[in-house]
Image 1 (cartoon, rainbow, N blue to C red):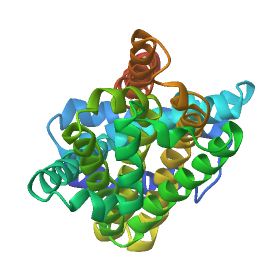
Image 2: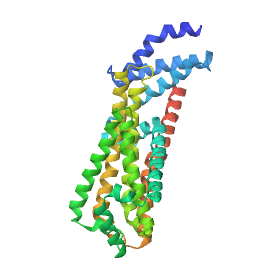
Image 3: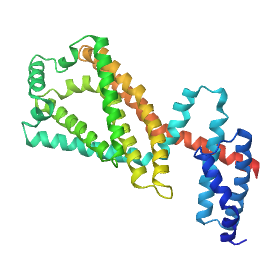
Image 4: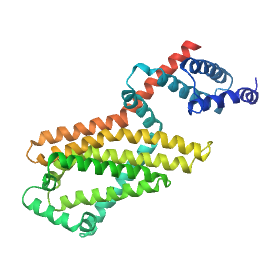
Length: 330
């Protein structure tokens, strides 16, 4: 059979499966399984007669998507929230992994700009951080308490206030992505430049080590989550700018849904960062240095694994399940 005729013969069916995947048409698990088996037969035919064709690539992607739909629908016995964090978010992070890379590249670039600005302009820290904060911190450094600013207020009050503020900043960074991703990059720029100048400020006064022992206790979760939120904004923005074969509205709906799910996954880390900052950071210089390092690198391992390593593991497991199912069907 010629490929053109094969496509013409099955095009409507494949478009219908796309609508099922996008949620426009609801199907029960049995109907989904029938669609999947039918699609696998088409994929097998395409792999045999058109192995290097775009049709085969398209059908392979479609079968992967419908398999995920079946897998998700049949997980009725599993806790929905557990499934969300354990499977759904990692698969989305894997799908949009290049946006996470872009966000980190911009973060490193913007932070470096903050450092260089502070190096060449001694008044830059006063402009970015505020003269009152700078003067207070200088006094704390002279008194041998570089993280003294974190010791004011009650523990629970600080934790709640900091958490709400960070969630607000993260939500703004994400939602400003609606402006083609530029809004998210602007918020990321502001925070990254501040971070860079902030760290150089402590270095300039010989207190970088003490500041790092305190700041990065909560900063690992807080800053990493901020970068992931910028990633979400970029996903949202590009879904508008580059709809590909979809209408701009349909592309926006998919981009909004997917990016919002990834954004929600940052909230536990943001909340943990607020709790650490409110309850633990104030004691940073009193605890043994090895304990600082355990907490800092422990947090980095957890969040780094979740967003950089675990998505590949989940995707690999899904592909193995997909392969096994294909082999069983064929």
